[in-house]
Image 1 (cartoon, rainbow, N blue to C red):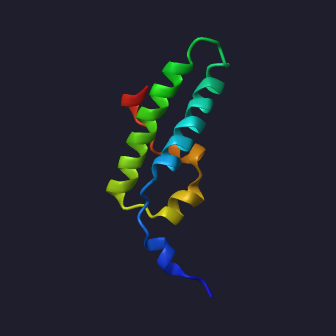
Image 2: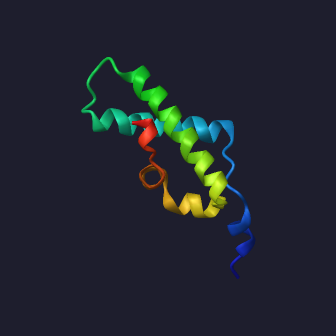
Length: 86
């Protein structure tokens, strides 16, 4: 039997989850620019900005934790990417 109540739990990231998301996003940013040395801090700060914006958008849109988890972080970043965070 499938428990559909999990689809109703809002996506609220813990501090550890947010930190992991930022680390993954920073890695993807570094990967995108070819891992050129000297930009790790910029990657991290940009990743924090993107993740915070994404989590706020997820919260406002009422996306559940299970919906978010099914999407995956890389796809979520693409879905909720903001022009402001470029």
